[in-house]
Amino acid sequence: MKSKIDRWRRALCGCGALASALLVSCGGGTQVAAFAPNRVIAFGDEASVIDDFRADANGRKYSINGTVSATDPTLDCKIDPLWIQVLANGYGLVFPQCNPQPNAVASPASRIRATPGAQVADIAGQIDAQIAESPFTATDIATVLVGQNDILAQYAQYATVGEGQLTTNVEAAGTALGEQINRIANAGAKVLVSTVPDIGLTPFGMAERAANTDTDRSALLTRLTARFNAKMRATILNDGRKIGLILTDEYFQSIVRFVGLGGFTNVTVGACDLTKSTLVPPSILDCTDLTLVAGATGATYVFADTTHFGSGAQLQLGTLALTRAQNNPF
Image (tube, rainbow, N blue to C red; front, side, top):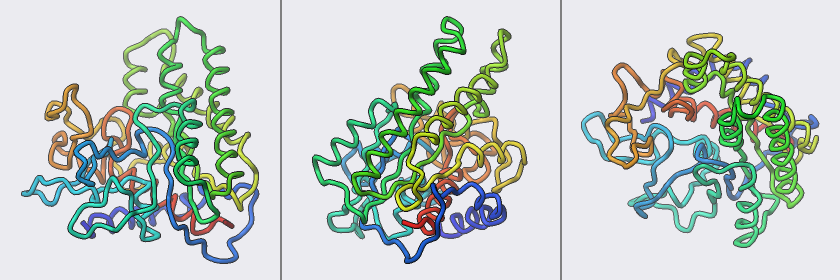
């Protein structure tokens, strides 16, 4: 496992200048002393979910799930970590949903409030749930990644609803998200927020372009994503002591434009072979590094399915998040 992670990290370091440019401290500033959080609290959608539906603290992800080895299909949630796990691991923290025996951490304080399918309207409730259990403190890092499901829901109404109205709707969602991010920051936590990746460049976006002739559907999805991100960014507090921004949209666009960046060679096909899923309906929740399409690996395929990042992209996003946290003036 270590060699796999080291290989991905070296790939990310190979584009270090670009990665640095995509980490934004809102309002500028430099870190005076190293910030050491006591817990990570994740808000958003399935991109930040570890689903411990078997209640064994060895949950599954909406990505490529790691197995012990090529000959041992036993799942290990610590292998192929989500971006929030990479961030938490950087500070010696774990989530209850991935804290298996025999080396479980006693009473981990970090929390995953993110839920599968969540949209911006769900974030207020996620925040309320956290405050009800344990209010934010100055030693918390909250992560926020949500909006893809909002954009897809709006896009599904095209062309019954025109692009102008869809744009208005996603902009309203972006503004609403920015307000919730500010709510977390004003409540005392430090916040790392990721922009939504360009949905127009996902396998889903490419397939929509190929299947429809009324307009360039990929370009439409790109425009909707851009307007959502722009409104969110325009709304969040311009204070680097409270909020750090990760420009995942721009990083992903660069991966698509420059094949091989970050070690990725396939940006058009999902790596998971869902015909091997044992769940009903089929889901990437049981996609593993042993159930991929021929030739696919988590390190070389950006996507697990048509819209969700695979393990390599999750790792790179997590590395960007950890770098931001370590350099923001929190």
